[in-house]
Length: 82
Image 1 (cartoon, rainbow, N blue to C red):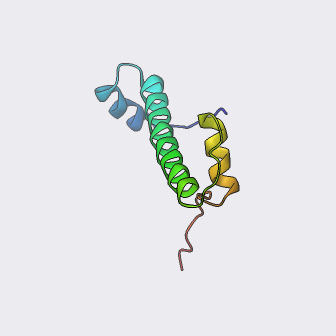
Image 2: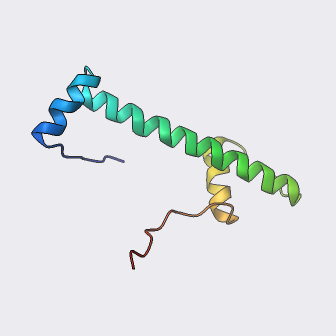
């Protein structure tokens, strides 16, 4: 997946104070957060499978998919502002 973000000039200048390569910094933040979420999903899936005597899928990709299929996790949804 490719995502594009747009920074204002001020945001760009501000980011340049904390990062030599702003794009690389943003990529690293997103990938690290995705890794953390993946670890949380896999842990929840393992716990659910063990508690319910369900065979655990093999491999991280398959375990994340299994967690969705079993309803262990769901996609985030926007909250109602009202």
